[in-house]
Length: 426
Image 1 (cartoon, rainbow, N blue to C red):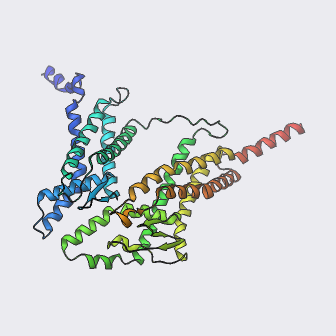
Image 2 (cartoon, one colour; image 1 turned 30 degrees about the vertical axis):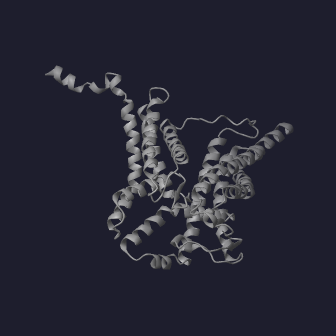
Image 3 (cartoon, rainbow, N blue to C red; image 1 turned 120 degrees about the horizontal axis):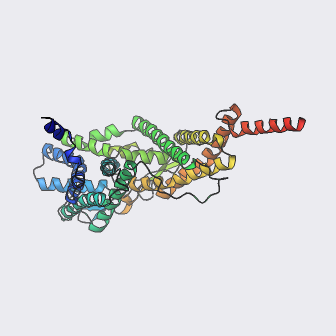
């Protein structure tokens, strides 16, 4: 009986090292399962609308192709539609965010499973990556049919899916490994780049992006209250399927609208077709498709109270300045200025990526330019941070030092001067 108890209490599954590892097939199926999970986020609403729609000419295969096309579009893949191959490159960012989160969680699980064995076994993440791309290849093949609502282009679509998958899985692996340092130290002297500067740049950048997103949400909410999106929705929808489809489409594009609102608040504005522009300094619009979110655009007018939208960018800049100034309580002015400038430069990369994904084309010709211009969006963020966050961080650092919080540089200088005077007097 004692022997049986000891046998049952032993970690049988942990004894052989072979049983503690997963086969390549299991990891491949894990990637396929992750892809199918992200696909279900699109497929369930699409098939639900197909069941509710009163149209009898659409088959289940057509609904499946539509789901595959939207899934690819959520990865930033460029698609085409219609007999004229009109480009469709505006990615619904809500699907992109959900896909990235699920992929990041999958990468985090892979990293945690391999912790304690040295560096991550690359065989397992690569198998998950290959399984995900296998489903992407099937989706591209299904959407290559000329009868598909959204037609794919094999090479650019697979490249777009591969890039997003690699970035999200890599981020999950990095998080699961405890966020190790992967970037080399900047070749700057300590007089300009102090210890703790990378962490301070990361916190300031995160605070800037969160505050700017919150400010963009306020701008979007005001536009909804003052706009006529509800009237456009009533005119376009005449059934349960139409209303539900329009609601889901608007929800999927809410993150895009936030990026557009952020660009508006920064002063860079955004394009609403070739020759049309919307910004707080002036708006000129042309004909636009009937869609509720496009009904939120301001009317053609000069700069007036719309400049109040820039207050959102100013508040975000103040948040970044406070974070940098708080971290710089023990730094010099040169070090504080360098960290603030590094934060402004670091904000350019996510700005370029967000503007590229949030905009695009819906048709050839005039509708080929929609959304913020990436380089303007990135330049506007860097300009705001350099113009306000840099002097604001220096001012906040000086104020904290004046108060004596954290034994700042001013306090240390006063103490040193006092000791020097005492020695000379003695």
